[in-house]
Image 1 (spheres, rainbow, N blue to C red):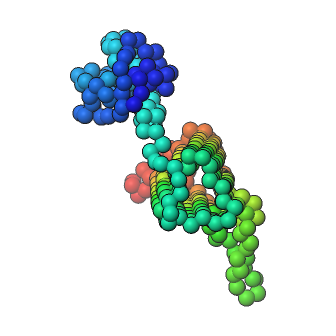
Image 2 (cartoon, helix red, strand yellow):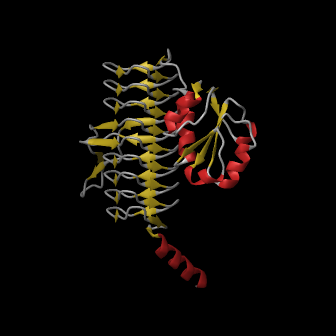
Image 3 (cartoon, rainbow, N blue to C red):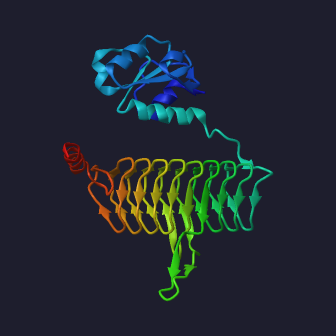
Length: 306
């Protein structure tokens, strides 16, 4: 529960004559006086005003269209709505270590964190404050997780990377030492059944605020920047770099030692060749091999004309 004026503080809006409390966020069809809703355009705002919602988060550009004591004018209603939902929902879990969890030696677990059923924490794993480690997660030895990290069920963090040395004479493969570590910074969220390998001799690092979907694989020695978004079934080969703010669509494939630059957007199914550097903040790349969207669409048109 939160006072309506407190909600205004969360989203940086001016509370005109709001009073009372809200306890939940809601869609327009189920909104009551205890609920917060949002409207991104004029049509949505008109519908929101017909409801009994206690608070309406609306875009500032619509301010001259109407005045209603329930409206909080914000720059991005959808983002503000998400902020309110997170605040009202609290952590969503009760701190503690489930009795079926397996915890190795010299493990540190920060205040307010939860370790769910069937979790395995290797020796010397460090977990920060207010983390949520869900059922059947495995975190290998020496991994470090920051504060407020969420790891969904079945994820495997810090496993041995897929790196081998091959004999030119016999063709035999021998595993290259995989003795580095995995570092996951604050506010990272990792989806169900995702796997992230430890470094070989150095470290694999996931930057602050990055969000990783289900069924993603990140190889050894990868460096993932801050506030990166990675959708399901993406695979990133070892020693690749994904810089701050990049967006990777579903089923993206990235070869080893590749670089995805700051703010680059890779469309679903895009393929980045080994060693390739993709640059251009805000630029969209698509196809296999990935290339600028205009070029990809031009090539596609040529194939259709065939």
